[in-house]
Length: 395
Ligand code: FAD
Ligand code: UDP
Image (cartoon, rainbow, N blue to C red):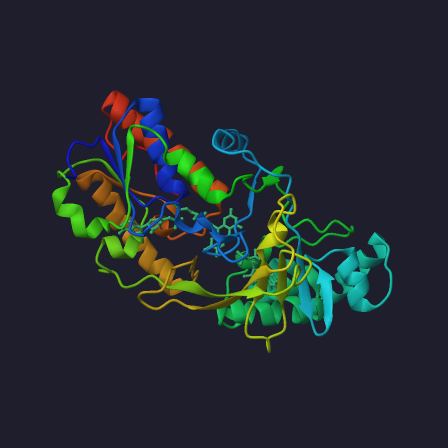
């Protein structure tokens, strides 16, 4: 039966589990979590590869990082974190460079040493062909940041593979998160806190769901059981926004990834967790080697598991991974947001998470945004009888 719950949460990713955990723990509400897949955790789910015993992330490498104090305090209630610091290498031609752009990469690429001032001057000169103020697309943005030679080696081919869209048609915001540093620091993230869950992602996610007020049902698609849920039951929906409205405004475009997993008969395939393959001719974008995410673990040393990652447009039936920030999609999204607002007011359904808002959210952002939804919508609804639609405007 689907009756007798105070709150229904559709989807057991970080967004859904955070909402469920808060409502169960803070408000003593009975929460039903419905999950279409046969496991909890959404895309952060991890599992042990049986042949090697190595923890793999089934839906792509997940690195936790945040500067949000509240999120950091919250996540530490469910897991400890290792001291892992993410570093990525980039293969161009027959060289491997320490990524992102930093002094080591600049020196190796241009074949001589530069002081920070010399490197700055060099890049400023190469980037000078485009005025940062006039930047209209990803290509111009990249050239204005790093100049054309580095753009062509490190960005152009990789971006073409990742997006299959001409870089002059892509939004500049896609690469603003890639830092350029005039030091030898090659940490990938700038955030204050970083690490991987000591016992893996799935242990963390299970701990969040482990509460007597929370019932998780796997292999249940919300749309198949919706008529059995009493009308008006407060619901937090974290599935795809367009699916909820039967695609009435058209399908929102997504990119998906194909993961080609292989067990290799060596203790170490590439010496690093992630190597990007930046040349357009190599069909995959990057190779992950999961053992390197946990150097503290005693993994067997005669085998290793690697994953080659390929990117393409999602078709129906594919996992939606990255929203596509194009004009067409933005226009549809606007119409779906209007529908969602009405549905919140009339049907008591809130929309959240990566799929429910059609926004690329890192884990810490999904958790932070779920905590905010709990504070601003769910708590006032349950404790003061306020409408779920609230009063403040959506972003
Ligand atoms: P999801 O995790 O997608 O969960 C949604 C859940 O809803 C899914 O389990 C789905 O099965 C379920 N669902 C959907 N429809 C229905 C339905 N009709 N009925 C029942 N259940 C339904 N973040 C980082 O911080 N660091 C990283 O390194 C990182 N790497 C990433 C790499 C990739 C390839 C991808 C795609 C994402 C990455 N992320 C990373 C982002 C991270 O995965 C998200 O922040 C997180 O998954 C968001 O959680 P969510 O709950 O919003 O969505
Ligand atoms: N990018 C690139 N070369 C790289 C890595 C990234 O050109 O070696 C660009 C590419 O357009 C990509 C964007 O920067 O989509 C963001 O990269 P990031 O690694 O943050 O993306 P994710 O890990 O989410 O795929």
